[in-house]
Amino acid sequence: MTNSPKIIFNSVFTLSLNNPDNKYKNSNRSIKRIKKMFDYYTNEEKRVMSMFDYYTGELTKDKNMNLVLENGKFATKEEVEKRKLLAVKYLENSNLWQGVLSFNNDYLCRNIDVHKLEQELVTNILPKFFKRCGFKDPKKMFYQLALHTDTDNLHFHFSFMEKEPNYEYTKNKVGYRRTGELSQSEIDFLKAQVIHTIEKEKIYTPLLIETNKEIEELKKYFNPKEKNFILYDKKDLILEEKILRLGQLLYNDRIDKDTKIKYGSIKNKEIKSLTKDIKNYIFSKSNNNFKLEYDNFKESLNNINNYFYKINEDNNIKNIKTNTTLIDNKNKYVDNYIYNAIVNYADYNYKKESKNIPIIKENDIIQEIVLKHYLNNKKQTRKDILRNYLSNNNSKQKFRNKYEIENAIKNINNEIEEAQKEFSKLFIANEYEK
Image 1 (cartoon, rainbow, N blue to C red):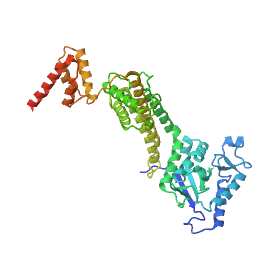
Image 2 (cartoon, helix red, strand yellow):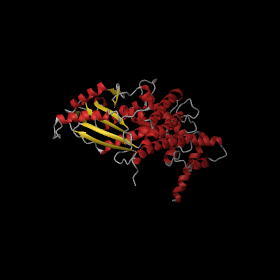
Image 3 (cartoon, rainbow, N blue to C red):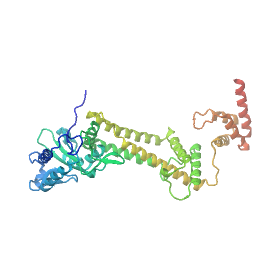
Image 4 (cartoon, helix red, strand yellow):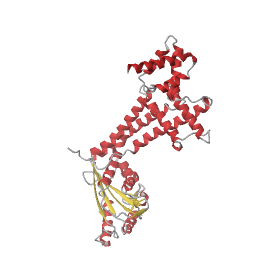
């Protein structure tokens, strides 16, 4: 079962006189059609007249006509006559497209002021629609709009033409559009844009405000001045090691050591890879408030996506994919902010604290851990320390290669020299068990 559409669109086209597909090149007939079109659009009996317009005299027969121009203003009688002549001129080489957008009155009035929609159509929606139809520059389009109230449904009439060759066949080829018929995907794009404009204040804008708030909360985790600054975590040896190593790479790679770093300008693949690795490591830690905030942000983006999906579903639009540009941009903004925060903190941290401290290699981390546990609890045997560490369920801290561990332990403090011997016996015992 399909839903009743909230908006109906119908269109017709007239091929240009010089269009190769035009078999009826009757200029007199075309001129009459254009004049009739403008007279119909500006018919006084069909236009909308609000009380505000009545008392202010904004729409009066001796001044402005019921025809909205590209700049959003109403045309005068003189301008309408000029546009008739221009349309005849453009018809030599440009097709003429005419369309009607018709609405359920209750739906329209519940969600948006009709004059606001009128302005949005002229200055925002139609220019986007022209781009979707393949026209390169909306400013090179000749178009007008008229709101009529003479039927049970409020409806807009509009028409458009090319002032000059403006259809982009390829990046290097621009000409007049030959095809007159609008595709279903072009029509669906226009309908989706109109519905979004009508409903966004009620549904979309609150979603967007909430998403922007969540982005600001996420940014706090990467601001050194905030108490929940996530990159400064001395208890996390793996994170600290990665940041120190990144700081050293950045310091060695950069000629200008003092300027702020932009992640997008980094060319070094190792630096970019390590930065992404740090980000992924932070995101993988399940027990922190940051992950909760980030999940809320992703949920809000999902709600925005569902909003656009519902617009298409409610109006039986099946031939156009949901536009994910906004969601993609929000994700990209957050990622870039985090990447920039990571590289700049790593650079600052290295220059301030770690210039003379050798970077800890990954297979050396176990030395720090074993020594730290031993010094904190000397009652514990060295063998138990190693055994407990090896049984750690945290895969990020678990070293399974016995040769790496033995090599690390060979260099350990004299306090735990015996631990290496005990540790080797464990592997020997395991060999016999096999």
